[in-house]
Image 1 (spheres, rainbow, N blue to C red):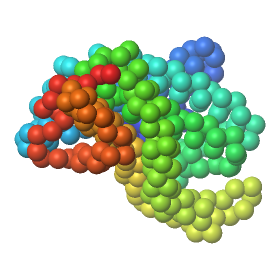
Image 2: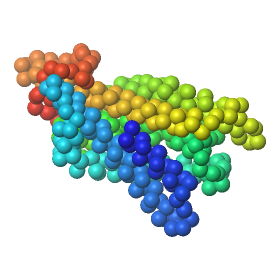
Image 3: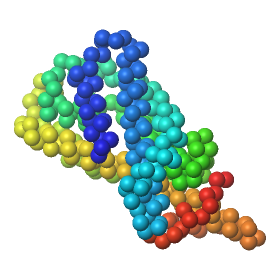
Image 4: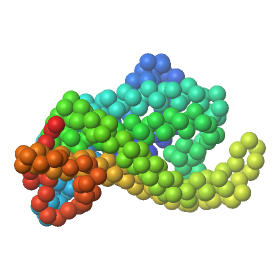
Length: 292
């Protein structure tokens, strides 16, 4: 929710108050990149905080303050390059989306800043196009891959390079589970944003058509707040699914290592029960990390 507040304030400022023609194209791209990097870093730090709370839950004494201190002291340096790489990819996809949609969208510079227009901007409610939907799907896929890499940094202290290598190895090993998580979280996001989509459809008019319902400003403000919760829930579900997949992989590695050391056949991944992310009993995090 804190990241959503930064996101919403930044998007509205850049859409309605920032003068994109004053500095030139290169400077504009620099401003956009700085904003995306800030969002990437804040989202990853919030996820790192969640991961530390999950680790502490095994001891039965999770502490928000202690977890925040641990994340800042231990993970922040490794999160920075991951956020940088994510922001670069995010920028490339955003510029592509802008190029594909510039001919179809009406200019926001001609629209007044009010509650309804703010809600439409934050919801990215405009003409549907398959190209934009495809880019949005790519952005979600990249985001979930990044979420799969972060547990290697936060839980196994592998650093950026080794953590990225480990996260991508987990992705390759369990691609079907990743795809199923992608589909499930996509469906959950559609359900979460359905009320907003309905209100947008009946409350806005385009191409000379009047809206079916005229909502007051407080209704649009309430919708913005609702979208903040829906956005936060959608990202949280993505993060928790990727965290559980990574923890499942860790449990499989630990079981395989024990079987190998005992001279037994290593179990298949399907034989390992899915772990409980919020377990209150000592488990994986009480063991030495397995980085192979």
